[in-house]
Image 1 (cartoon, rainbow, N blue to C red):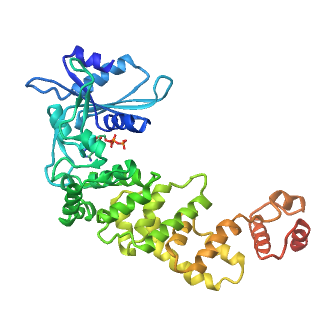
Image 2: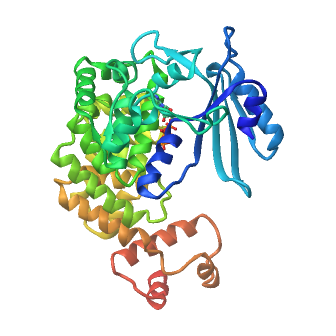
Image 3: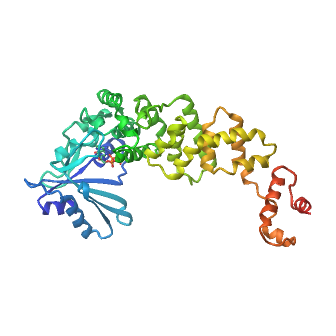
Length: 425
Ligand code: ATP
């Protein structure tokens, strides 16, 4: 339908980017799952019609009223979204006008101008992502591969399109690593050199500097980190980022040291044990663990730059102080109830972060572990209804009575209802 609508207007329509790559990969792997489709409209004459993608998307929405239409003016793109639709399940179709990008300065947000399909493909990140499949006739079904993407796909190589690519957009380093690890490809040696060159030339300064003039870059870096840290291959990806020196884009001092690896393993154990339902955001906890590994004075700033949510920034800001408080107070706790009183001031993500962050202080970790597995689940043996039946007048004193019961239960003074009633008497 989309190609018919384009042909009717005398335009060419192409399938581009990840969907072409995944289609070609499916030839060898036999598996294909595409949820995102990128289409590019091209074929205008002199007065390039920058609104073509939007016009086509509007025409398609008339044909498929169940699809939601979104228009992104600045980049002349439109998206059609089918969400849990009987016809398409869940599908996202981006329709853009062929375009060229200019970077007004390195690591800036690109500025865009209408252009031809070749130039559109040239602005992309890697050869395997820079192929197009023509959908309109004549020659529908033809593969446009100007940069050797198919060869690289067969050779399992991640190859960048031009030398300046990583300087223009450092998040491509993260994308390259993500594709390499996901497909089990190699980053081609020259591309590795370009990555190292970009990093050595300080491209990450622009991603980490205070009051960054390129906040959109931080947003894209965060999006890439999310992609990586929620994927099953996140550990190998971090390892490769570290080998390339690319963790410096998060902070110049960040390295995947043995201690940090240990902390990340511990974090996984904590998340599996204490949050099996995934009520916490696990990729974000992994990112917090990386940031927690930095010196305390950098943590909040890095979290703010990456635009993490308020609670996450607060956690990283307060981590050192909370850890200090626990390290100082825990040895003075004489009973389980005192440990509970101390630790219940902190929520689960903070306790997980503290437990993860303090591997050397193993007694502390054991206490937190025991608190989370056992003590935090202990309830007073009687509840408010029981107190009522025993003749206590409902009121604010209930809280105190139940607290006293909890303390006695935790410290082993009572273990059943009879003992609890005797205790109250
Ligand atoms: P995935 O399967 O992970 O979604 P994808 O290749 O479809 O992979 P997208 O992030 O959806 O990834 O991007 C779509 C296409 O847009 C890419 O294939 C690539 O051609 C281009 N692209 C995306 N991000 C960049 C970037 N930072 N620089 C250059 N080209 C990019």
